[in-house]
Length: 445
Image (cartoon, rainbow, N blue to C red; front, side, top):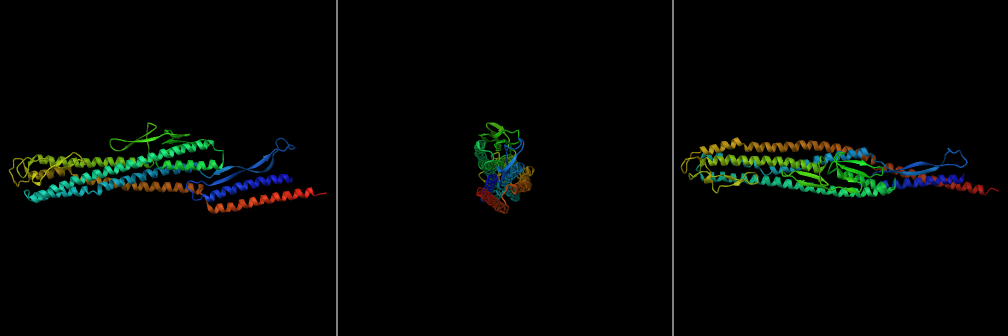
């Protein structure tokens, strides 16, 4: 009987010591990123007695059945999904803000208005050299401003593509690390401390990858994971110890295409998708800016071709180029602005061709087109910002819910520390009492 008491108390002491070790780990890792609270799973230790019936079971203490991670796979999946959506929205808004700044801060709208105003002033005295020089310089400023806007948009696009490439590189690095964790998990002992640490690493890597691309997961019984790009039917980014390389290419309009292991792949969420969406909007804005520039060039040059300049010579193109990047002033002097109609003599004060030029500009309406462009991009930024804030709130709520379950509560751990320490001491006391009983029996004469 005393021997049985010692055996039972010994098993209880071992269980209490294991629980104390786990509690100490929880406390020391309370602030560690990605750490999931652990607890000890206990089970009754039963033995068959030779003198008992074949089906009878005698309880002989307690055993450590394993280490349990307090993590809900559904909540972890929600954190990854909502986090990917929030990252996509945030990356898109940042990209759109860069596009908006590139167009607004260069002052294209103002330069268009100033150019039109300079032509209007020239109507008052079409032979005035200073007014002609002012109109030409306003045209030069307009061309340079549009050039700057185009260059700024190109720079914003280059920045987005650079960041997207960095995201692709990060995905490949994290996927390779996840493949290594899979290999180690396949060799780890069940319910061991090493396995728990590897599972923490696995979950942390999955969450980090989800901030760049949308993924889905399939878990095996040994804790290894198959990571799919996109939905569950998507291609495998990680399968066992193998990680497939993600690659990026730039399309003709500046947007991005992706391949996984050489096969075309789509990315619908995560920061990389957000940057690609911003690039699509940038391509649209750049196309509108090119249209505005081409409209100005066509309207002004067409009017120039229909009139004569101050010297009575046939009007030459005022602007060269065909789009926002190539637009430039082609005239060398303000006297070459064709204000008079064809057939008029030198120094003609007939400004009917200048009126035709202003009418052509009114029809092209570059100021209205620029205003529409600016309003469109500003509206896009405002609308996407509302969506981003909502998605970030949802992602934050999902993360709080997961942390409430898997995070370490220091108050609760302090209670557990006291409880398991008392249990350890109590089992030690039981062993001491059992030893005293056994000694008492042996001392009977």
